[in-house]
Length: 489
Picture 1: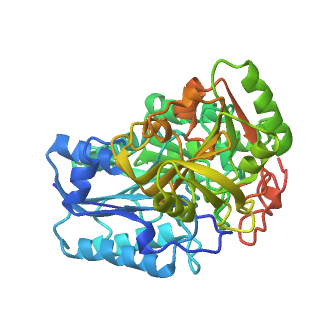
Picture 2: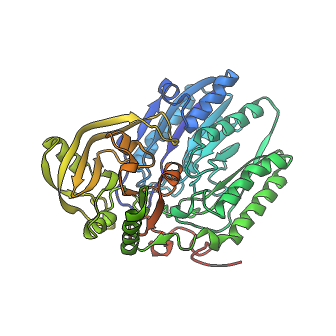
């Protein structure tokens, strides 16, 4: 067997005006995919694992990912489309299958569903007889047209995404069984008409965790059902297919797939109000005050979650911590290339004046004028130690560690979300050294920080990822038919 491997993944906030270019993507090409991802907790790592086990010849083309930020420029999207299709053309007629990773929530200025467009290009190149197995992020926005070019579709079960390699393995194992003639997969999709902010999409929260458990259990107990994926969607992409979806893969029986998808989708719709978890999110001022009070009595760190920050540079919590006199607090991985460069120019031990953070948009809180002592300055890269992307190399670029009046802030050149202990360990610190830790992740931090933190305090801010979706200027999302914009039984 000869199988192509390719991937293109980014999660786009439609409301941001900047565009991602090719330079914003981390890219692995050819055998570099195999060298970098073999044994790693990534989708291509899962693809490779099954192919190695089954003795399948792999044709690695390109795998490119960017941080979850802005839409992708049409030029960058077209570049990766050409790269993938040109790679397939080189092996035209010789491929037995394709293993493809896409995120499912990419947007460009002219395409509301670029993931669909790329998948259809792949299908057009390889023809109708070659199986194309698609692995998607749990936060993908899908409808029937999005996945119409795939033979079967598989999504992460969990957020935090601790099962990325497992998802790649599910897709690759389905491909192997299909090529051997053991199964003939068919796919159905159902949409419950529910949109949720990312902060409510953690699969550790009820009732969502129960739906994920059902999606894992049903294929084991229902003859003919091969796989089920629940997708929470990504509500900050202003696209017509925004929101929850359920994808069921069955063996030959499309009616079965549709019935199971509709049943689970109906259950999600019935739980729509509970999915917007009441009381989980606090007002900024009250939340920071509460966290500081809890920290005085706590034996472990309190996580303050600035969840609405989509560009990793919001300053609302920083400003409130300063206003309320916080000490022994940490703000890891604030994206601010200018401040990182200034720290590197000044050097360790110097005190510098900065306008810190808040540069990305009018909603990011604005830069904060501070005096900061430089504790570290230089390039920073390391293998990721946490469960997500475990073992892959993180490259922060020029980086500074700053003491801002008792608040320790690390500023990076490359946008990187703090979700594990690396932002502390890489500077000789531990999360437990601090009373308050400010994070910006939505769900991924929970894999490490739920057991580590004494308490997680989530505060809402007026950035581009708020808990209240009705505050966003949607134009194309299905607000006329989706909760919380309408509430229909």
